[in-house]
Length: 212
Image (tube, rainbow, N blue to C red; front, side):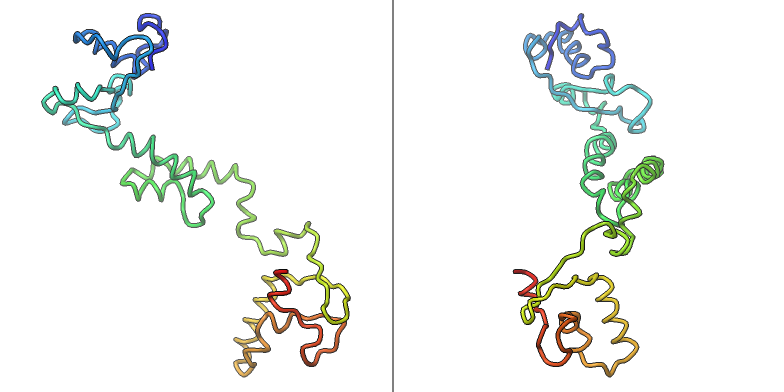
């Protein structure tokens, strides 16, 4: 939107909507190029030139009506919209997804991924939480208070063991000793009150009890 008269813009050459409005005015337009008007424009590139050329963005901005009348001299700069409008948004949305990176996303969009490698490295260096993504549960949550469970049989309390370690223990036991019954290698069958007798269901906790 034009907030000032076009001649009052200090950096008019660097503002796309001002440049478009000036051309419209010179072409005889009486509406759409005055103070308070919203000036639509599209970033383009000339036919036969590389998209994203050294020409400033403001100089490559064109009104939709100009594109209809230029006989194909200008075409929409697809690379500009992929790299400046779509890629940054997608990168932010996918930042927490492991296996993605700015250069990988750029490659999927058909962009030159090498232009985004430095940004990816800098972001990784600044992200102090990155090591935590690959840390074991015991390391990530070492400063957290343990979950205390109440035994439904003796009403004693005990700490919930680390889930990651419990699952790994069950998997390793099953792998090293295939004859171990599935029921005894299941993490839920092993979760029981250490104060209760080890036989039978006395002191055993179910997923439903944990959820409640």
